[in-house]
Length: 222
Image 1 (tube, rainbow, N blue to C red):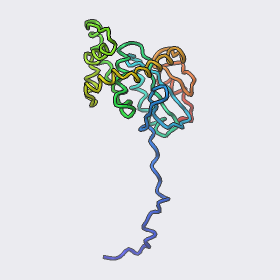
Image 2: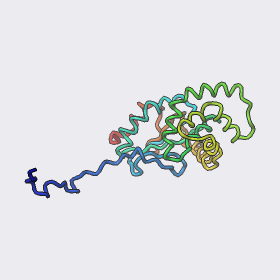
Image 3: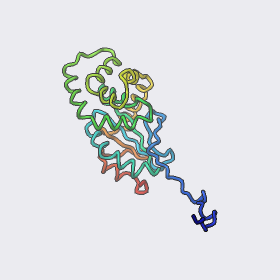
Image 4: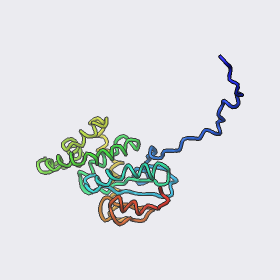
């Protein structure tokens, strides 16, 4: 076998010439001070806040349409950070919001998108439940009953959570406090007109569709 005639120095690629992989900011999800879930570069020049209700069909449509392009075109490269906050409308929405937080920030975005992707199925069961169920005076017991009998627990079971874990999420006082604080902010301070509602760098966006929101994002945000 012939030996290589190339100097060893030419066979090795200098470490300085190997480009480091670009950061993918989509994988970074942390809790914000108010309790929202922030995805993206903490130093992103554009900060988008989404206020959502899990019982809102417009929110489900928005998440289905906007989640993928927001991640790939805006968040991934670090120019936009997206924070999900609650704007609770009813006890069913509150139940879903508490369940979405199960597993901590690392599991939130998956839970969030799954709840909206399957909204029509559990909302259909919810309508029957609302008409026929015996209501409990205890809030935590009532929300557990909602979760167990409307398909919400079943959906979260498929995501790997046990009923005991879901019960603990429903009964988490810190999570409840944060959700209610975000709800108060949404309706009484930011004064969103409905859900989904948005702010971009603190300025409220008038409208609730992906096309309207995309037009409100700075051109340099891509």
